[in-house]
View 1 (tube, rainbow, N blue to C red):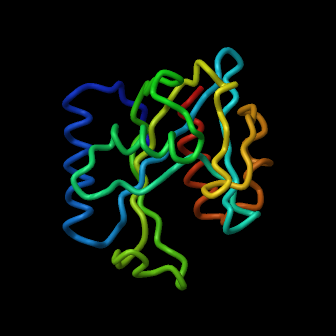
View 2: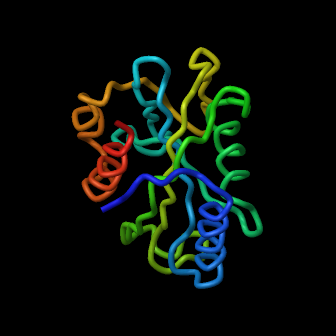
Length: 171
């Protein structure tokens, strides 16, 4: 079961080592996931994939070789939502989980099994600054925690269940 951890240099160093190991082993592609809560109501930003209208989740993206998880989070939030680091804070680490790729996506980008998701809790102090990059995302919406299961109903079951386990750590 995932667990919420306060961020510290030792936690970030441990996560970065796990990311490095993932790059070396080439089994699971390391991916950062931003669970962004909006102040003051605690709604979380869900985004829709441009490739699959049924795929809703949280902003995410691969960690590049040699990149730290914090740099990857900042880069991905800028790429997908045009958010600068002044618009959010990284509050906690929510754990990692591996997910096997669908059969047609195995070996994509050279990883043999799937993705290793590293989950982070963030707070967005400037939700009006969120603007989706249409190349990256089809849509975005703020969802109250009581509505997560309904909002993610069309997402692939294994991915949906994994995301719901981590979303529960926000409250």
